Image 1: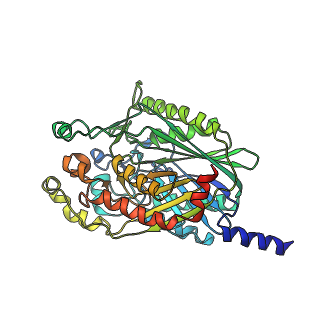
Image 2: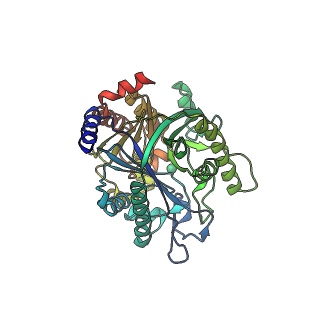
Length: 437
Ligand SMILES: [Zn+2]
């Protein structure tokens, strides 16, 4: 019997279609604001003032997937952005599982009410200094959740649905340089796409939902000094209530120029709650209608290319002269590009805030490589600022003048690099999966 299973396992591995097993984990990563000074990251206008309380808690969610041969941990966090230090600690603390920079994918929701956690002076000048103990505590809690998820995997079925959240976003870069935009025949790009990946037990019980949507968590403004996961936290909480026993992960998309259009409410927190609940109400029927299937395969591609040379726009050089040395010291020369293929979906992790047009270019390149469900994921693994294309660079504005560090070609560079590593992911079974649908 034992030999027969071994032969079958080898056959499955040779064909690249081992059965998919999934496990989930949750970690509370809320820093203790009474024990530590915890400045909040997101708005420079807070001038590094520490958090005064906790409005709602911050979580990390883990979806651990393995096909016997390969394993991956998709980790979503209620934070502004990840850092290499943060990810390296998670990898080091899960070394017993053999996890690496390739097999751990960290995606932040981009909440603007999470802790500052940046070792470099450049970011601390904007968001405040942090106590390294809070990062150690977060990564220990996350590593425990990864170990828990990995030790409790069960055979999984997978499915997906793509819907639309019309009217929930606007392009915030529209409203200046309008004459030039009109002369160029440009129209504001928005993307209402709301995508849900669902993972079930073999008996059909929902174990995990992965929700992908592109918008800034900026309903609650800079005057708030309480920790909050913002509307992505509300989406996760509401869907976990609608699907009892499930863990919900949130992935932000190419959100660089996408602002939330929130319903009215008595205050910012009420508007944040209503927005998150409305997105969850749109995602829930999508998730409920998904018919999951066995046989999804997984694969990983990862690269750390050398970035284009550091380039500061003229306007930024003038306005932020005092920041220039710190910026040059802080900004990385290489950055992680990370693809996870999970069934028909390919998560394309970009280490910053891609403008929507850049995300669309990335997804189009992956479509040309034969992938049916490419999803650009912002705020993945690291943070190198806004990822802008040539057209938008020429228009200037906040995202260019304050937060673009690698010149107008960065967007095209990213799309090119993603396509190149995507080609390495294109196995024989991508086409056959498509055909089987
Ligand atoms: Zn942002």
